[in-house]
Length: 215
Image 1 (cartoon, rainbow, N blue to C red):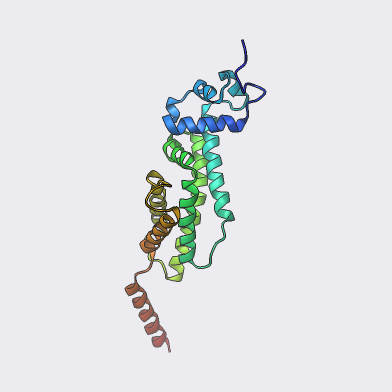
Image 2 (image 1 turned 120 degrees about the vertical axis):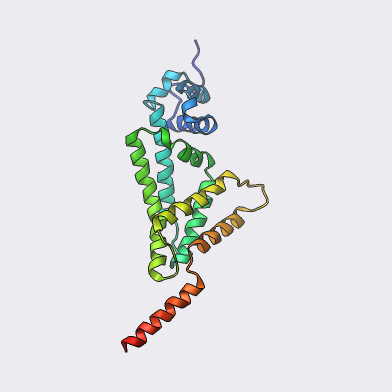
């Protein structure tokens, strides 16, 4: 019996992961078998086990690699000074990065629940690092008096959820360009947390009154 094209000697880990990503995104983790992944790659099912012990490991590798790419890419981004500009940069980065990887984003949120407890904990810790990056921007804005946020953790989750929503409707050939979408969403994020002008005036007045009383 002839070997299938791309069998044992030709198969590679990246090809297996690419096939798994495609099938998990299209059909869901639970509905996809190792045999289907093997067929997508073009090998016998047994050959997959040379590169991954099981389907759970494949899912974990995909989600972990995606989150590491997010963290590395944000770390490499040039960070402007000032929390307002920093928040705009984060918003634009998040939209741009995630729109370029729709399948990874989809399974990162839809299939997280299918991870085993230890794997889930690892992914949660990585996601928390990313959330912490945004929350630190909000805290800086709070400290400098330019943001008005009741709860920075809750606001962080709300902003990320809003930014994630773009991946569910954006089309490259649609009415709005990517640059325009980035601009609109980053503006909405800024308006959601920015200190209202009346509060700025009130705080400035209170500070002036306190300084005068101390003289």
